Length: 353
Ligand SMILES: NC(=O)c1ccc[n+]([C@@H]2O[C@H](COP(=O)([O-])OP(=O)(O)OC[C@H]3O[C@@H](n4cnc5c(N)ncnc54)[C@H](O)[C@@H]3O)[C@@H](O)[C@H]2O)c1
Image (spheres, rainbow, N blue to C red):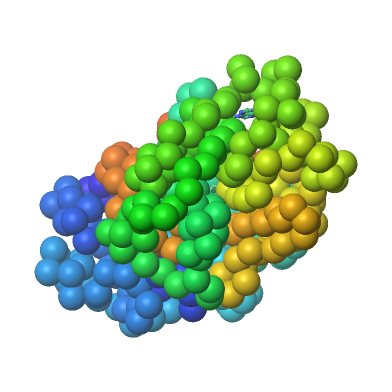
């Protein structure tokens, strides 16, 4: 990345401890000849000293607004509301291309400043497959929380932890009853994570993916004690669960974890709830007798900030080392332009064409 000046910003959201680049990968970026500036950030899971030790420059929190114009600002989640005009190229999850609340405003800020959004969700290979994602740890966490709830050991509020600590709580204890678990979307990133966590909990989960849901056997689904949904739905399919299924007298299902969290979307395959659950109240009881508990948390990887940052950073590093105007980054820029056009937003004099 010889020409690249990458500026790793502080995350504005106070609970966000993850980072897209960890110190060991920061070392590789610096060694490749590029410039890396890292903002001080009190909550980042890796202390600033670890970045400094590998040759990164240190800058105050939020100083990206005055970064050199050619610097590319790297983060994960939303930008603060100011400044009104965004002049840099920014790499982060913008959540701005599906008419989400605030999406048009964000794109207008880029258009006004001549900057550009390189959205991590749209960093894809030639076949449209995502190149950097947090799915594995989302699935791992989702399945782990389902196990803990099923065994009556889930402690709220949830707080960020480490894999070591989490695995300690997952180990089956004397007196734990055996139960059956189902992972749907098992061949994907989060499905694989869910599978590994369930194995760590001493379970042997049933695994379904597209093949097994084509002709959905709801009775077989309801015959499992716990279910972890990890599908990435791209076209509408018949829902896996409907309200009426919850009142099926044959239902064994007691614990449901929706990693996908497509609630409110026409693609939602679990049409049995209307809002996600949160860290302070991770579980909602959908039925009293027999009980059915739902966990539907949409920021699961933040609960394992170190491991999920390491995993993500490892996927992002080769792409940053190859940063340029073509390939995946070119596709990202094209997607940004298309989104602006779709909204009738005229791009300002972008310096980054
Ligand atoms: N809750 C969170 O914190 C969190 C975090 C990251 C990702 N996610 C979400 O998790 C979902 C999965 O992400 P991923 O990275 O694992 O995606 P992925 O593309 O790696 O895997 C998705 C899997 O679902 C399967 N699938 C799709 N439709 C299916 C169907 N009808 N029946 C059975 N299987 C089906 C696919 O074949 C694939 O194997 C996405 O919706 C993503 O947004 C949630």
